[in-house]
Image 1: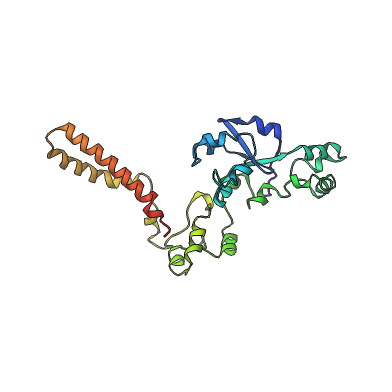
Image 2 (image 1 turned 90 degrees about the horizontal axis):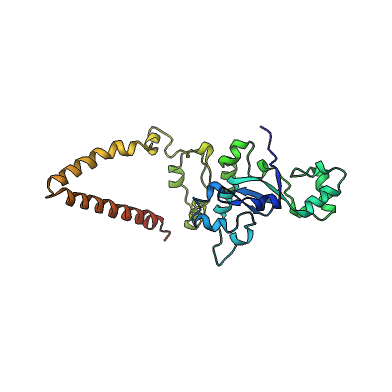
Length: 264
C-alpha cells in the first residue's frame, strides 16, 4: 500500500483537545492523541493532563521531574495522528502562489523550497508518517509494528524472525549491551510474539487466559476443601483463605517487581 500522509492541525486545534475524553499533545511538529494512554501512563493520567493540548518536549527531557527513556519516545509514535502547522508555516502557505504544495504536511519539494526561503522549514517534517515510523498503512501505523530485518541489521542483537532461545544462549552479549537492548521497545507483527523454541515445544510457550483457571482451579478447590475440613468454623476458614490470597499476591508482586528485575 502507498505511504500515508497524515493531516496537519493548527495550534488552536491542538490546544482545544485538552480534555480527558480527547487529549492531544505535541512533540515538536508531531501531534499525538494520547487519550487511550491516560489510564496506562506509569505516572498517572493526571500528569499528562497538565500538558494536554500543549508541547511535551521540555517535560519529557526534564532531568529533575523525570527524563523519559528512548522506549517512551518509541511508544509515543503509536499515537501519532498528524502534524502541527505553526504560524511560520501557515504564513508561508498564505503568501505562496501554490499553497497546496505546502499543505497538507509534509510539503512536496517545491513547497519545501518556499518554506526554506521564508525561514519556516525547521518547523516542518519532511517525511510522511509512514516513512517516519517505518509503516505503510493506517492499520500498521497504530499497531506499532517495526521492520524486523532492519532492527536486526541496526542493533545486531536478536533476529525476531528466528527462535530466540539459542540466539540468547550463544549470543555472548555483554551485560550492558544486553540490558540496553532488552529495554528497547520492539513491537512485534500483528501484536504477537517472536518464536522461542521454533519446534514442537513452541505451543508450550503460549498460554491462553482460560488455561490458568482450567488447570489450577481444581487444585485450589481441593486444597480449600481439605483446609475447610480441618477448620472449626466457616469464618475462620474464610479469614485464612483471604489472608493467604492477599499475602501471596503481595509476595508475587514483590518478586516480579524486584527480584526478577535485578540488574546486578
